[in-house]
Image (cartoon, rainbow, N blue to C red; front, side, top):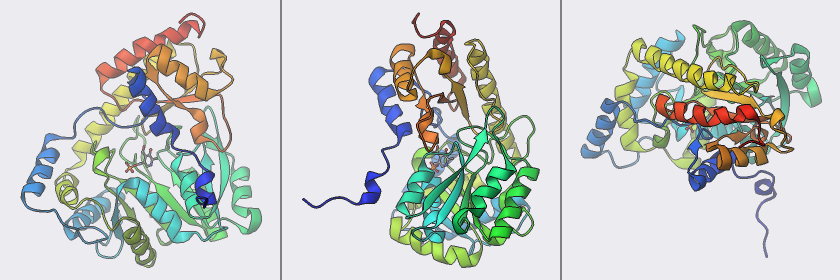
Length: 390
Ligand SMILES: Cc1ncc(COP(=O)(O)O)c(C=O)c1O
């Protein structure tokens, strides 16, 4: 029999999405896959209905409908303070997921090295493998999840250097919001080693405690070598609409458009039209979004603090890494399944975010409504007594 490709045999199905299925099987509260459990703003839902009624059913322009690109360029210009050209600097994609894969495929040739911090969002390894690139991991050190500049330099300088470095900021899963000083260190290395920076900024508006999200492309000299990827999934609670984008200099976008075209042709036309409405909303929308998620974070952390287990305090995004070592499992995958079945709360095994089996952590998300988080918190309180007593 013919064999399927080697590249598809070296990565597994997503553990994150698998844990959603396990949660459904056991009727557990799903704190595994990060998506909001509420509806998007009503005006957005209405705009989607209107777009359907207005007959927006056929392909949009491959790299995004002109109205959406104009609205997005205006929003990015407001948020980053740097002008964005709707004609030449944007590609609308099927979510941040496609944006990231298209970005990696746009810059990497087979055998190129691509750096990323570890823990990392699990898609990046698959993106590298599908592009034939070799992943190089730079550890972020708990509890603060900072990097060691010597380790970062070592990654940039190994084996002829890095073609690209993936920066997830705010970071899934560890919740870091990198400071300007940290990002400037990364920028200096990118300049020195002539490396592309691919950013994943899908949580750009979820930053807490008065922190600032620094758009990497706005750092001095970085616009020419940064491919900024982001998404409307998290910002407008529309993960199922599959809308994201790439933003980069025109010479990069010219190549990325082709990758995107042959991967998907384009994102759903009526939904591209609908989301234009939301991109016009002012700063109050983003402020109240961040405030709501900060309240959810504090609610979940309140319950976790009662378990006696250690956990990270997220500076942004909506995930917490919980150290489950005291529960005594030799495998985090077993622990995640046990929590789903016996505690009634589904987490993601921490190993999904590391290049090796990391049996110490599980990841929980707080993208859920406060009543759901309260119910999950009550269940998680059982962990206080350890695993034997459940
Ligand atoms: C860091 C990160 N990037 C990308 C995605 C996927 O975003 P999208 O729904 O826009 O494909 C997620 C989803 O959880 C994520 O956490």
